Image 1 (tube, rainbow, N blue to C red):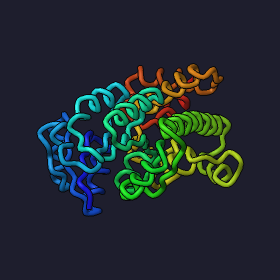
Image 2: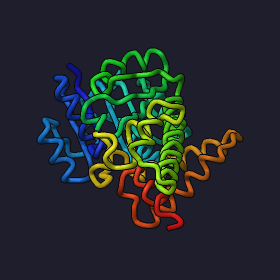
Image 3: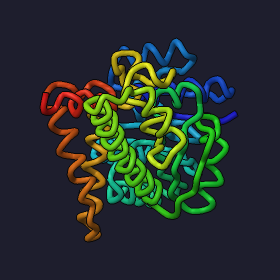
Image 4: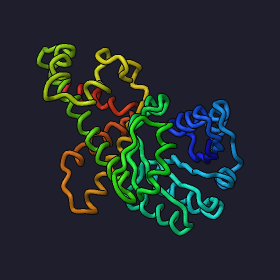
Length: 294
């Protein structure tokens, strides 16, 4: 059993911290939002008075925060309170440069560190079936693995500092593009008079198959676990997909990579967000594409 500090108890962090409690770890958590603190406390998380208070006796420190600036701000605030020999894990999805800066903050303190963003949405966080993409030294990843395996079903070391974030950015760019492609396919089928069920039956076992079709299908009624069946209640919010797509574009620009489909995806999701749909699941983009031209 490890003493774990968990900072950021939102949609993902709340479930992840609860699963660590279920795995018999002692978890002290903190979040700025009172309702999130209360929800975590009901799951067995001991609530600290502050982020610095949460980490004071921690063997492992985990953060799950919205953006790179939040991660760096929190890490700079807590680093002097982190015990020597601790392990720091950031599970946020942030830019590669910020991830590497966070590694530097931890290294200056002399503690092991990994960046370990996740994929799988709130359903995966709740079920502890997340995929974790990990960047860091072999030693740090080896230390982190037993902890990460309690919140996910697959842990992949992607390389050194920041490479977990690099993998996450690439993955989510592909996911966002695939969802647009699936939405266009189903919208076209409807205009042609082809039923969504017939197209699904073909595509799900053909070359057009993707998780956007068989996992997070944007058309209600085709995949039992799809959030489209529940008024697109977010498993992964459109606002978060837009954030990640923008991170991917920034990363591409920083290394001179071309990403034309990623750039178009940013425009489409941004347009839908401006229409007030940023709180829906990212698969809700289908409703915009389906309605275009009507």
